[in-house]
Amino acid sequence: MSPRVKKIILSNGLTGFICWYGVEKVFQKTIHISVLQVSLMAIVYITISALLNIPTGILADKKGRRYALVLATISLFISTLAGGLSHNVWQYLIPIIFWGLFYTTQNGAYEAILYDTLKEEGTEKSYARVSGLMHAAFWASIFTSSVIGAWVGSHFNLRLAYFITLIPNALNIILALSLHEPKRQKHDATVSSYAMAKQGFKFLKSSPQVLRLAGTFLLISLLSWMTNEFGQLYFIELGFGVFLVGLLNAFSGLFQSFGNFIGHKFNHISVSTMTVLSMIVFITTFLIPVKFRYIGMAFFFAFVLLRQVFYISNDTAIQHKLPSNIRATTLSSLGMINDGILVVCYFGFGMTSQHINVRTGYLFIGLCGGLILITTRILSKKLKDRHEEYFEIAPNLATEKIDSVPR
Image (tube, rainbow, N blue to C red):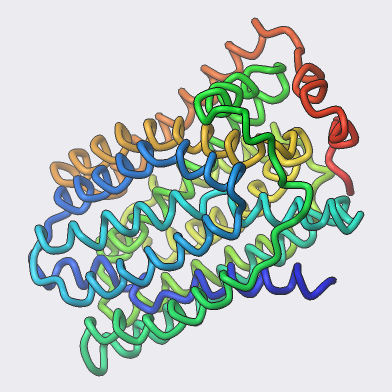
């Protein structure tokens, strides 16, 4: 593994070192933010993400992934600082806005710069394994920082978890500035941003297989977002205290890290099989009554592990289908669609959780996920395969037309 690749992995790992991440919802309760307000703030965040997804993807494709990652790390620093200084829901909107900018700017950029770096080095077939290591580093950082945050929050105060996070945030800004920009990311400056955005959306309809992969991406992304964003509310509903909520969130990160680490070993399992297994485990988790909370937690962690294995397989297949010159733009187009879905689902989850309970809110999300999958499957049957047209635009990238995931 080259030093350039190791730098990308380290930077992504530092991105996950967020001590307040595991106790954020507990902190929000201490400043009198309700479950519904948590969902509404998430809608604000995801709306910002939806509006900026395409522009930041184009920035990454036209100007370089490194600049996008520098902007992302600066946004995370500001979000962390503003969060630690917040005392009510209105003040907490500031860190939410910068968190949205952080997520949107780095979304797809790490994967894109990693794939293109490996491609430049002639080792792109190792993407599944290296990508798994990169995401494992991220979730290992989430685990470590969540344990630290839980201990700090229970022994000192929750605000301190925000302030100590500023140290790795600052280090990551410096590291992002030093990342290498792969040569193959040079683009034709005459191509307009509008044309690139349009091309990114059109590529998602370039073949039935691409649309099906996009559908499974949207499904697993929805379920992942909901368990990551609101998992702490589920832990609180099960009756766990501050330290245990943070610790359980840390173990969620550990399971995700392990799932990413071993994900490439399960590429032989079909995406359809992984989809069915993920949906069954997800729905079963939230059908289990509170009095059997330990069984519920076992299923919750089983889903977290399974979904990460599924993510690696699906992400690898998508990356090998994308032309390099619109890689980040296409991923951002997909992210924008995902954000639109999340706005609706966040509101539905918030209303259901506020008036019934959090577990019912998650069952509502399972229903939404099923509808996404069915819709993309139906639409894919009406498409003709025009995948090769996009490689005619950049004939030097024709070697990226890979129909199966490398083992």
